[in-house]
Length: 328
Image 1 (cartoon, rainbow, N blue to C red):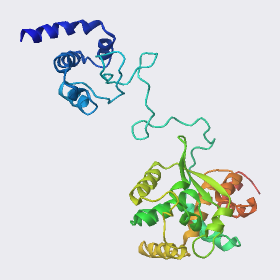
Image 2 (cartoon, helix red, strand yellow):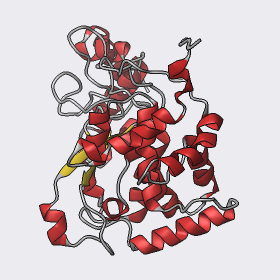
Image 3 (tube, one colour):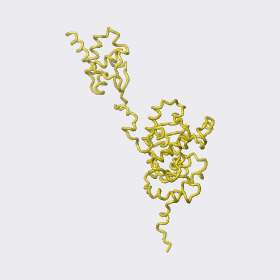
Image 4 (cartoon, rainbow, N blue to C red):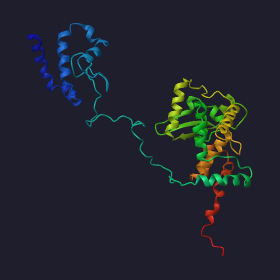
């Protein structure tokens, strides 16, 4: 016992060592260091305790923090032992800040935000005006507005079809472009979560590999955190290969499912299919003041003239343009 006290006394000189200073900064682990050095002096003839498997075992016994915030270091502490238990500080005296996470650390506001950030839309009025738009505008495609789309999404309980509908609604993708998606088409560059679409004209069935190779690409940002989480969860649960298509059904199957979904929620006066979500995406952006050229690029149109037809929705409720004009 006297010998152990003597050994403990000889370790008390560690109070001024660099190792001691490091542990004090890390949260006052000096007693664990002293116990560690004590056991080191007692057991150093037995190499079993100093091999890689044995060292973490001793750390757990004597209250030392093992590599939770950093790596071990052989330079400053007990001889021949890895004892740097915390993340090394930077030159400023503070630990490097971890990369912010979306869940607990909201992203900082973007510096290049679009000028129009808030638009008040009378959805009931626009829904009431839709019949007139479809009757008076030649070749005007059927479309839905946000409250109607959200009603369909809430009624869809199948996770795969819900994801397909979400992607068509939030990206304006053609059904053939969605069915061609693989895990490699989803990209997170640290600033935006995007899906890279290959611009494909709608053809029967799924696109062939030749069509995919020749088609141009466009990157569509996905800004909805819930949809980002749904995409990542779907990819994780599916264990897909990098170039494996994540949706295996055909276009006709998706359209039949959409038809059944519409019937379950009460039916509609117009034909609703996969193209309806793409048209609704374009009109939704225009209602929020997004430039026609940008909408055309997001849709993958070769010419802006193909996108101009959606602007008829903006003039359907044109009474306010005549407000203040006196004819008598």
